[in-house]
Image 1: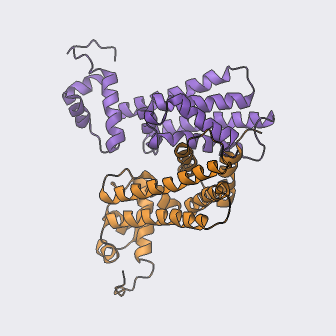
Image 2: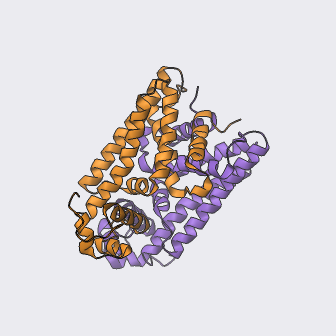
Length: 195
Length: 195
């Protein structure tokens, strides 16, 4: 999207289209949202939308990339920490909550995708790749004696991420900031509820 | 559905219609599934389907009731136990996993509903009622000194159920039986991953 803006419509650039699209995808579902709906919600014409975007599938891909890029950046950040695997795992789970809070609508889009198209399949493959990073951290933490040995690493990774991802179903900023929510998740998952 | 079966089609009764419908709802989505699709998947005519069922919304309601009734039966079972609140809470979470495993397709339908109709709104209200039961158990367990005081009961309840519900996204019987999976969930949530 390096073409000059011929129409001079500030605010209706690619980001604004993506934001509007993602909101509609989450409200009505991806299939039920048309490019026309996206244009109407921005108060512009459909051809103005196509000036910025090739089509609905590009918007879906951009939305999922926003979510996935955030998660992989968190994994990169954690990999470079000189800390025991348990602490890197805990930090990664905290960062997942923060990415989810900051990119809430994008993560929500990602988590509802079922793999019906090639673009969706590719996103699911990246999600599995991320799951594998978390699973490896659990394994390392077990090998270092930081995590209890009686849980299967892949199961633990899925349940940890399942707890994080459940936030897309109910989290509102009024429930507490992202850092506080990240703290609640890691307290329950790493320390356990039992006093 | 107390009308006599005039056509004598064993296996194509209401339960069979419900099972077929729920499978399609989860594969394609509720909106994308027609009564015709359900009939085709059973190899019967659409009018035979209407012999058993008033329409798609009845099927949705029946599916969600299967899930919700299972959860409320679990809550009833737990309420009558003469045990500390912590143990009742832990038992209820185990039972939630077992209900989810046994009624997998029904729970999956329930969790995808967004409240677009009155029937869906009613199901969401029952879900909130169930969440409140879990929240109350966390509160009681905190008051008895069984659960750490530094977690908000409603947040803890949502995260516990979020972890359980995430199973609809990935659980397959090959990952272990329902009892084993229930054990993994409660070990992580109550004892914590940290060794």
